[in-house]
Each structure stands twice: as C-alpha cells, then as structure tokens.
Length: 300
Ligand SMILES: NC(=O)c1ccc[n+]([C@@H]2O[C@H](COP(=O)([O-])OP(=O)(O)OC[C@H]3O[C@@H](n4cnc5c(N)ncnc54)[C@H](O)[C@@H]3O)[C@@H](O)[C@H]2O)c1
Image (cartoon, rainbow, N blue to C red; front, side):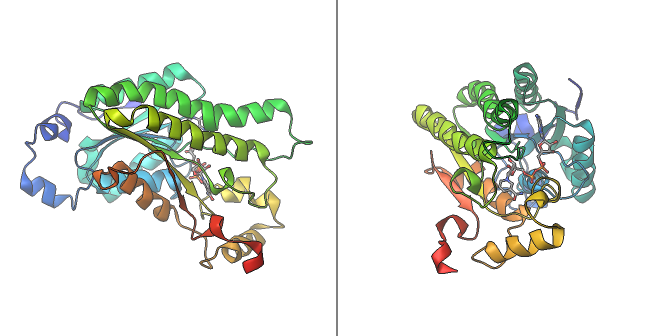
C-alpha cells in the first residue's frame, strides 16, 4: 500500500518519549494535551477537503501535539486532508503521516499499524472512525448489504484493534476510541438496521477489549455521535428526507439543543478519550448528541 511518509527519524516521537522535547517547542504548539501520544486515525481522510468527523479529529489531535498517522481507503481523501491540515498547521509536518488502507483488508490494516508504530516509535491511540451508512430495511436490504455494513463498521474495527493492541502492550498503555453512533443505541427514525446493528456491535466489541486489557493500562471506549452536520449526510441520509433543506431542518429540530452537532464537538470528545485526562474512563460509551439519546418523544 502506498503511503506518504515524513522523516520519522527527525519526528518528535522518539525524543519526546525520552522527555527531551524542549519547552519552547512544546509552548509553540499550544497546550499539547496529547504530546505523548501517537495516534492511528483510521478513516480520517476527507473526500473533498471539507470538515468531516475524521478531519476534525485529526486536526484536534495534531493541535494537541500528537503524532498522527491518518489511514483511509481513498488516496484522494488522504491527500485532501493532509493539504488542509498542513496549510493550517505547517509545523505539524513531521508529526503527520498518511497511509492508504482499506479496512476490509486485514493485511493492509496490520501494515498501517506497524508502519505507524515503527515510524513514530510507538502507537498509543487507535481512533477508528470508519463508518459507512448502509440504508434499507429488513425487507429491502439484501444479505450482502448487511454483511458489508458489518465488514466495514465492525469487522474492520476488530482487525484494527487486533493489530494496534500489540503495539499498545509494547508501549505499556493505550487508548482505543471507536466512533459508533447514537444509531447503535437507539432508533433514530432512519430505517437502516445494518448500520444500527454494526454500530451496536462496535460498542460491545470495544467494551470487551477495554475489559480484557484494563490491567495492562489499555482502555477502550466508544463515542456515539448524534445528529452531526458532516458532508456524509448529504449523500447517505438525505434520501430519508424530502430534500437537503428539509433534512437539515428536521435534524436541527430533533436535537434537544435545537442544533445538530458539529464535527468539532465529536473531535473534542476524542481528544479527551485519547488523553490521560480520561485515565479512569474505560469500557463505556460517550454520547456526543446534545442529549438526543436521553430524550423522549413525549418531551417534544
Ligand atoms: N455524520 C453523522 O451525523 C454521524 C452520526 C453518528 C456517527 N457518525 C460516524 O462518524 C464517522 C465518520 O462520519 P463522517 O460523517 O465524517 O463520514 P465520512 O464518510 O466523511 O468519513 C469516513 C471516512 O472513512 C473512509 N472510509 C470509508 N470506507 C473505508 C474503508 N473500507 N477503509 C478505509 N477507509 C474508509 C472514507 O473514505 C472517509 O474518508 C462514521 O463512523 C459515522 O458512522 C456520523
């Protein structure tokens, strides 16, 4: 698989783990809550350079001082994300890598994890953001479509965890963050049982891994975004509504806060779960939904 590599030997990774990063360098890049972290950010390309959940997460990770290896199936999405990130934060060039891999191919995922760990000297965080919306109710959707949702949203996450965990064990710690969905917890009004089932499975997969490795300092948690305003909804969700305008109005109105969430809302939760600030948070799911999963139709 192709990759874009920056100079690993000169990256902040090795020196920083040994505590040699200068104070001025740390100051120059801000608070650096993730300065000790190396993050494999899977599905964090941006097909058109617009801010989706993946780009927002990668941006937040870099801003907080992490070394980040972005993985995506689409080379164009990787290049677009890389261009945006480095235009915003040129100083992050040595802390950013991209790697093309399809999560349906375990070998490619293993390669991505191994290359990230080798290049930066460690792998301490896995952020699994890949998610495809497979629409269609139980009568309309064929079994192949159902399997595809499970393959990409759930089995891909399993494979990513499988190949990231050994690196975390080598580092003596780690945090796994799975981007699930409020749709994995509740009926969202959309008839997409394959997506819902895959996201529900992702939550318990993540909890199981968090429990298994808790004593080794490896935590695993899910984020359940609610109704988020990303480019994806204009292709995958709009069909559930009359048109884009109606979709946006309905999604804003459905939120207890009166607005859809932004990718940055989800990214801030990911930073928290990646950072030592969440050291005692394990095997749970964090809704980022403005209260949506707790709301009741009776309350509207
Ligand atoms: N937008 C929302 O309202 C919302 C709500 C809840 C959960 N989510 C979840 O947030 C995550 C990101 O959503 P988004 O709206 O930013 O979507 P997006 O489609 O913009 O981003 C997903 C990225 O994953 C990549 N990808 C897809 N299939 C892949 C594969 N097989 N291998 C590697 N990469 C692959 C895509 O190229 C894309 O860059 C998804 O898991 C989604 O389910 C979104």
